[in-house]
Length: 324
Image 1: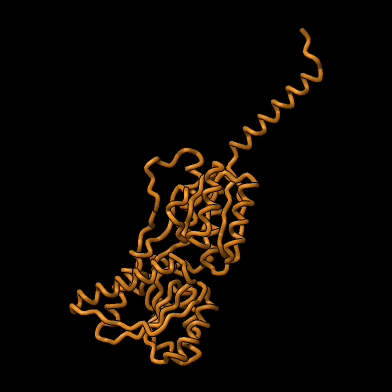
Image 2: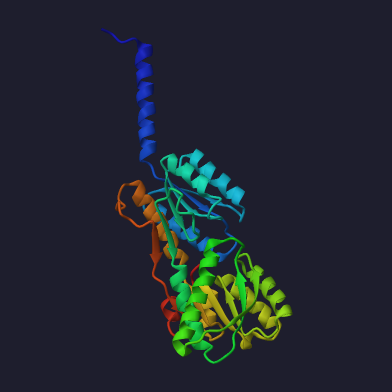
């Protein structure tokens, strides 16, 4: 029995359609959603994640949320609509991105969170980040030894209000400082004379430090939640002629400008939070999850190795030609 020509064409069209769908399903398209690119750390993390995804044979699409939660939610929704099958996300808000991430996961997308925290009730594969608590404790211990016997008047420069990462970082340092002081002398004491908000940027750190110096000119320690803000604070201290009278401490990051100043003895310590490492691992784990190669018992949170980077060990980490 001859099959009518039109039916044959229809069958061939269906075969072609399903074959195309199968090919699309086999492809790896990774969406990388950054809540901001307003500081060098985020640009370096984006580049690292993008590079790793391409090395693993995937295509990428990226988005900058411009520090706006509503825009980042729209970015994620757009990526889902465009057919990404893996999503790497640095979320603007630990609660506000939960619904968008859950919707992506429900669509079959493998989601890996990195750098900033997301509420664990969200459905994602894993969260890749440095341990803010462990890094903080190392930084606090260093500060206790550095300032032993001196009264501390600390200016705290935080990132953004409500940010879980910032809270973890400052509390980690405070825990480490308190415990180290207790071990030294069975007493603990320091004064945080004021808290400024630097929005994670160098410009924000500069402005916050200017305001803090007006209110508290006798500050002898600046403690910031990332290097960018502390670098900005240092500019304000230089302008006020006080840069050599204040110990600079960052809870996290390891920005090359900070490393260079640490080498020169002009910056005390920073916590290791390598954007190349976190971005690379986040992309790797998302793609391995997509391909069924990630162990079933892989941890919900994956911490990179902590370190307090000081003049004694900075050469192990300093990369003068890095983006960050």
